[in-house]
Length: 120
Image (cartoon, rainbow, N blue to C red; front, top):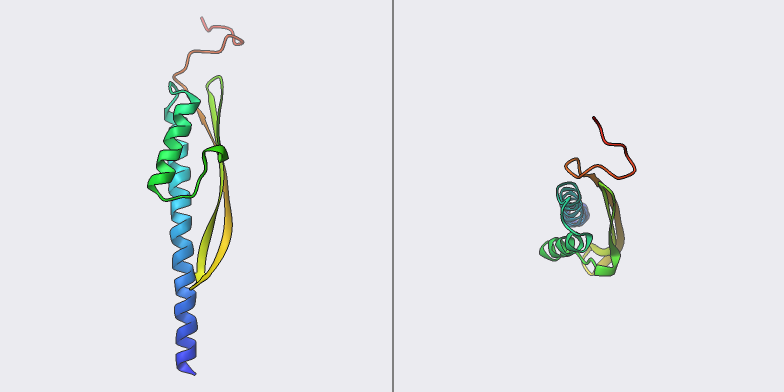
């Protein structure tokens, strides 16, 4: 009876650790993307998207190029991404979880928009 409880506890700990590692990679990628859109005011959206893909590859996140979108509207840059990653919650049992995020950065060092009057 104690052995069964111990095996269940080990299986639960295994699932929590594996899910935690996947979540840590998700948050690390999201944090990197937030930094990119905030501090890459002079970079083209395609360059930012390429940096996002490089970071995803480095973190071994299964992110496809088509699942990343970077748009710029004046000083505002928005990046969105979505991917599904299987989480091994039990040996040989994978639970597919979809991760989605959207981050926005506002570049304060960009020239004022033509729609706004210049300050005197």
